[in-house]
Amino acid sequence: MAYWSKAPIDREQITLFAPTLDSWIPPDHPVRIFDEVLSALDWSSWEARYCGCNGQPPIHPRIMAAALLYGLSLGMRSSRALERACANSIDFLWLASGRTIDHSTICSFRTRFSEELKDVFRQMGRLCMWMGLIKLNQVGLDGTRIKANNDRRQTATARTLEQRLAALDEQIEQIFSEAQATDVRDEDLFGSCPNSGLPQELANLQKRKEALEKALSAAEQIEPRRKRRSKVPSSAPQVPVTDTDCAILPNKGFGYDPNYTPMAAIDSHRGFIIDADVDNKGYESHTTIPVIDRIKETFGRGPDRLLADSAHGTGSNFKELEDRSVEAYIPVQNYPQEAKNPARREDPSKPVPQEDWDKLPRNPQSRMLDRGAFVYDESSDCYYCPMGRRLTYSRDFNRYSKDRPILGHVYQCQDCSRCALAKNCLSGKSKQRTVYRDQFEAARQHAAERLSSPEGQKLYRHRTWICETPFAIIKAHMKVRQFLLRGHEKVKTEWLWICASYNMWKLALEMARMRAAAR
Image (cartoon, rainbow, N blue to C red; front, top):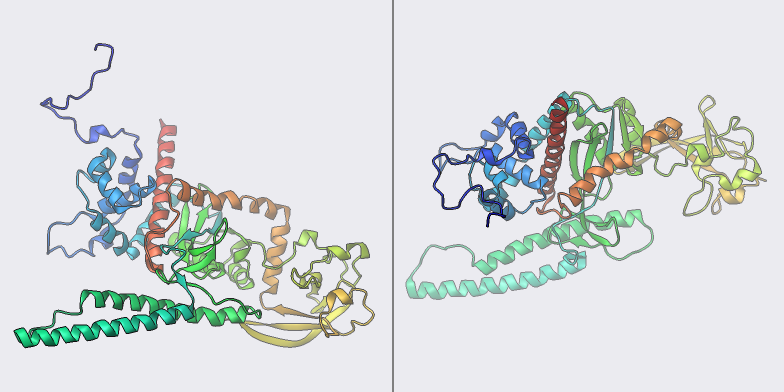
C-alpha cells in the first residue's frame, strides 16, 4: 500500500482548518479573469430592473451573467447543464460563491436583459480598446448560417397553411360547441358558477391557430416579392411554421434549412468582435451601414478600413462609406476586375485589339458584352464602347430598388451599324446600345480601383482569417450550430450572449499572456 499516493483529504476526516473554496482555484485559472473583468463593469441598469421589495433576495445579475458567459465559453448552452455545473463544478461553485441557480431562472434571465446586455457588450469593447486590444485600423464584416429552432420538415406553402387553418377552425368550432353544451348541463345540475376560462384543449388550439396565421401572413408577403424577382414561374415558396421569423436559406454545405444569418464585425488587431447582429432577410447588404454607425457610437469613431465580401458591395453602401470616411475593400457586385479588363485602356477612343475581344467582360446569363466593357469619360460625360465609339447622354431614369430610389442617366450609341461586335453587344431587336449610370457609379469605380491595386489585394487576402476564425471557434469550440430560442429579437439576444462570451474568452487569454510577459 505504501506504493500508491495518499489522498490529500480524507472524506471522513474532521479538520480544524478546512480548505477554502478559493484555494481550489489556481491563481491563473480563466474563471478568475471572468470574475475580475465583470466585477469592473457597471451593472446599475441591470439592478434597476429588479423590484427590491417582493419575494426572496435575488441573485445579483453580475453572478447570473458570469455563469452564462463562462458556461458558453466552455460549450455549455443548456440551462440544465449550467444548473448541474453550478451545483457540482468547483469553478462554477467559486464563480457563484456556492449559490445554486435553477435552470428556469437561467432561462428567464437569458432573454430578460436584451438592452442591458448591449451596454455590457459595449463596456467590454471599450475596455479592450483602452488595453490596446482593439484599434479599428481595419475591420472585417461577415455573416454565417446557423440553423433556427425550426425543424426542416416544419415548413409549408400558403395553400397548405390555408387548408390547415380551415380544418383547425372546424375543430375549434366543434370543441367550443361541446364546451357550451357541457356548461349548460352543469348549470342545470349545479346552478350558475363563474367561468373558469377556455378548456385546455381549446386554448392549445387557439395558440396553434395564431402560429399558423402568422406563418400564412409571412407566405403571402414572400409570394409577390418572388414573382417580381423572377419571370419564370416556380413552385410556391415554403415558409417556416415553428419560427416564422427565420428564412429558408441554403446551407454552407448542401440543401436548404430554416436559418438565420448572424453577423459579426471583427477588429483585425487581436480578433475581438466589436459588433454583432442577426439578419433574417436572406441578404446582408442592408446591414453594412448600421454596423458602421453602431461601431462609431460605441467607440467614438468608425473604422479606417472595412473588409467584406461581395454581398456588401452595393453602390449605396460604397457611397455611404465614402461619406463616413471609411475605405471599403469590398468586391463590387457584378463588376469585372479592373486589372483583367482589356477595356481599361489609355485611349478609350481607340478600339480594343481583336485578340482581346474574348477577354471583355460579359453577362454570365446572356453572354453579351457587360457594361464593364464600356469606359466612362468624366471630362466629356460620355461612354466609349470597345470599338471606340461614343455613347452620349440620352435621358434620365428613376427606379426603386429595395425601397431605395435609384437616379441616373442613360447613355446611348448613335451609330452601331457595321460594328464587328454588334452580335455580341446588341440583344433582341435593339439597334443602339444603351448604358445606365446611376448616382453610385463613381463610388463603385473608386472601390474597384482601390481593391485592384497591389495594396488592396494584399489587405483583402487577410479578410478570410479575420472573419472566419471567430465563426470557427463559435461553431466548433462553443458548439453553436443551432439557436435555442425562437423569434428574431430573442435570437439576436442569444447571439449577443455568444459574442460576449467569445470576447470574454479571448480577453482571458490576452490578460493571461500579458501577466506572463510581465512576470
